[in-house]
Figure (spheres, rainbow, N blue to C red):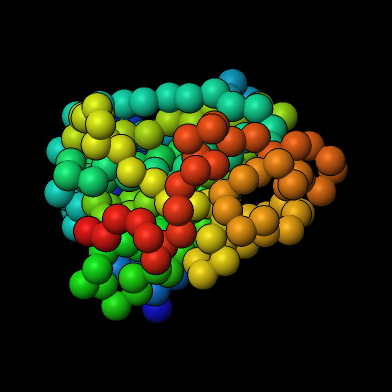
Length: 218
């Protein structure tokens, strides 16, 4: 069941009531959360807080983020599913341009939802953020012509610690939107495309990951 935490805050300078929506345990998976910030707009444009440590603590998330990352990808690019084995990362992700379908897969061996996935569409328009705690594999598919993807992490990148799992493992059964193709028995992307004919593009490494039966567990 989704736990919705609606919190009212007050801007000290403008005395504007701000409502922030935090959906906890989305998809019935403990720890996953979707955060929708309040956007203040007028004919000049808009303003929003993309991160506020006090607000996160008030919502029950006491996380020390140490690094911000940003990537740019074209339509049909799929990045993932990734994790760090011995230095797992909590991520707070969002799309600052374009449209992506973002996915997390629970790899916590003691979790009641081990092997379960949840996906959310993150766009520059909806401004949603996806909070993914340690112990998950993570990846996203670009649905727009171009997407710029931003995320915070609570640990640094550690060389030689990267792990991953097959993005199309039928045992997990991720329903990637607008994607067509037949499972070839591996993570090979050559037989897949988006509905409009855009070729699915993955790195060579991401086409070699194994399914959940043979991948790493936290």
